[in-house]
Amino acid sequence: MFLFLIIVLGFTLAACTRPAKEPPLDRTATMQAATLTAETALPDSRTPPPSASPIITPSAVPSETPPPSEGPSATAPELAPDDPRYGLNLASPDYHDNFTSQTTWSGPNFAGAVNMWDDGRHSATDNFADEYIWWSTTKDELDTGNLYAEITVEMGDCSGKDGYGFAVRVSGEMRNSGYTLEFTCDGSYRIRKLIVGSVVTLIDWTSSEQIQLGPNNVNRMGFLADGNQLYVFANGEVLDQFEDGDLVSGNFGLYANAANTPGLTVYFDDFSLWYLEP
Image 1 (tube, helix red, strand yellow):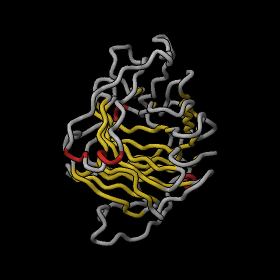
Image 2 (cartoon, rainbow, N blue to C red):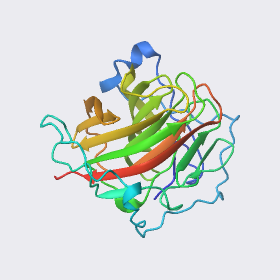
Image 3 (cartoon, rainbow, N blue to C red):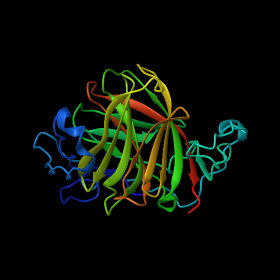
Image 4 (tube, rainbow, N blue to C red):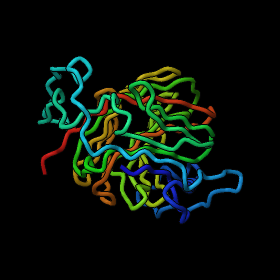
């Protein structure tokens, strides 16, 4: 597992930068084939975490099998033939993490953000309402390309575009590339592609009735990647789809993303992963 901070400066693994700011909304809607935006250096007003900051490396030993009552349901609804997940047994993931272990995910703990295990959940706090993203990844042996993954997320006090993200195919030497799905307090979603700290918006903010909105909301996020075909889900229903072949394999990322509320905290739980047949 490699702890990831969205980084473009040549710092050590615990240093940080931020992705470039995106163009105004009237341009981001047409960026599906756009060139990556320019990278932006960390401003002097933010002090990166010291290179000596401790990083907890996830154990290579698989976590204990959770009790049946804490895992996915023993039965799952039958999927329609046109569902992109058709053929998967959603009651039986290939890997499941109910966050009873403190070492399967970890993250930075400094002035900008805190990502940590919190009583059986992964807690992510974004202390500044800015453009930074700080995500945690999981065990390296879970790296994969063709997959379906789900995670349950609860958000605390929030407003507007305060939100949280779930990333797949997280890759690169510093784990600073990946596809991200973000949900917000106002019930919107967005899909972005990050490559070495630069960002492209693939699908801009779109509202959806499938997303539970408001403070203390709980949503089940889903991400399916099959070759260059990618689908995103909210609470078991398809939200959207897109095509992109720039990132082919990698890990997973979890993060909070404060837009209006400094100190925004979200909680992740019940991560499930299915490997797709090649």
